[in-house]
Picture: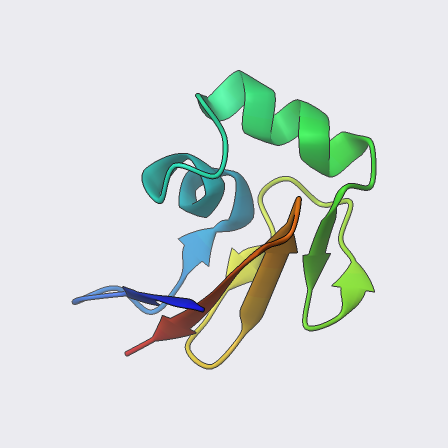
Length: 70
């Protein structure tokens, strides 16, 4: 499982996270995959593209998993 740091930020938008860590090629691809229900946050399908992902949440997409840390 990959770990991603928020750095100085309190949260990161789900579509931005997918793009940042390379799970999706670009923002448009990330938004499309979220809209199609292919992304899970903490085990549940998430359809909000700008969902705020905070520390200790787990994001899953196409067999890849990442945990967000402080």
